[in-house]
Image (tube, rainbow, N blue to C red):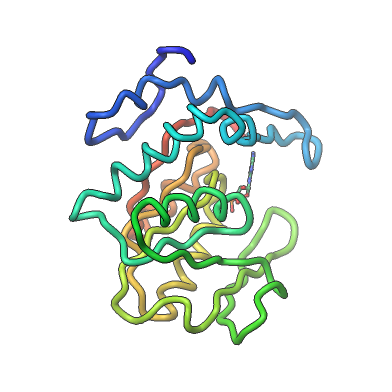
Length: 196
Ligand code: AMP
């Protein structure tokens, strides 16, 4: 474990977990899944028990604050499930999955969003959240912001309020985090990478 301080947006500042170098545990895989993409692979972060705990604690300590405590955590398919489920468990609130089209068995609401080439659809069970509930939305990474925006829209379709979007990684040069903030979504991310 290194001592470089790479966490940003750290507001509470009371945990030693701020001293873990998360970037040292994120693997960059060039040209995957397509040429030109620098894939930021978070699996090494999950694999190391101390780093995984520190990562989860960074989110949990923030969302334990009464003003930020959610009623529900929503995780985005698929790495958002890993993070979101553990954070929800620690906060003692429920977890709901936002899934790619065709995976959820019950009645859903859906949101179509644009990708670089073509479009994608995400779905949420109609009874996943209730009007007025405060939801924390989690994914592993924000690139163009389309996925998180679609998640926000789905939750709002059901009358919930998304209190914050959280992710490990932000790629600010792709403009997604600015777009989400401009749409009124507060964000909490832990590390940035330049470029894409
Ligand atoms: P976007 O909708 O463009 O913000 O893309 C975010 C979603 O795509 C997240 O669910 C990420 O897991 C995935 N993603 C996009 N770009 C990358 C990348 N460079 N490395 C890892 N995951 C990525």
